[in-house]
Image 1 (cartoon, helix red, strand yellow):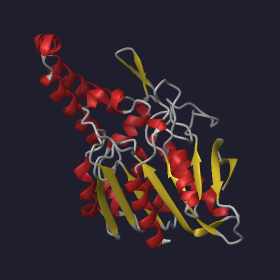
Image 2: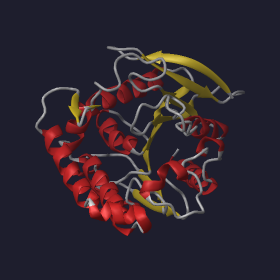
Image 3: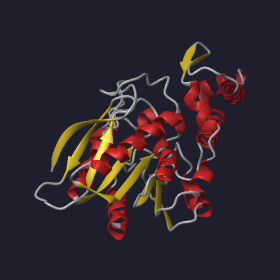
Image 4: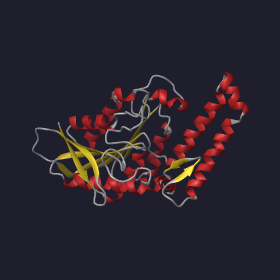
Length: 313
């Protein structure tokens, strides 16, 4: 395969990497990889320590080995891409992904009628919106289907509160004494209301800058209506050890779509698409994701993606 740095975008410059199978003269099917939440670059890595996830470069290389052109890109305000990440909203991200599809359609190596979108985490929500203005060959929704951001936050908070209540020893007694679990629950509700009532792109909550525009637009988006409007085949898959999206909700996607939809849970896979033997709680995410970028993506996930793609290409 060969890789080249590319730039697209009509309003701002978004930079990414196009990965192309070698030794071919015909136009090929393509996959656009749409990233999850957070300031992630084209490879799925952040600037902070412990954020080297190597998600999207591994996915891109696998897809290209199977004969697909792949495109991954730096989100606004990350890597080489322009603008401010913290001021970026949900609809800005949708616009960037649509521009990426347009770029693929015009590439000399790509069959414009065989473009697939693979959304990871937040990318699942974006993918449904991207499909509205594009004639896509299919959507792959990985680690986040049939759930809005608001619902995912509730799921994560509930897990955190239950884990706080179960803590034992001195730490557990102190948390109980100061009623930390109840305060955390109330704090989450206060945060949601402050974001919904805000008008600015960025606000402060307890002294920390928050990307309010992004939260607000997510909270106001009906993901289920978006899924109902998708007009191409869908493959939704998540892992049984995903702590950031509710695993069993993946099966509910069939209720909200009007197209051929397949859903699957992969046993032992976590939100970073790696096999995980341990049963970590959400308060142990740092431990669960330690050195995760050095591990290969779940073989079962890759095989299931390949099988579905070959069936629809």
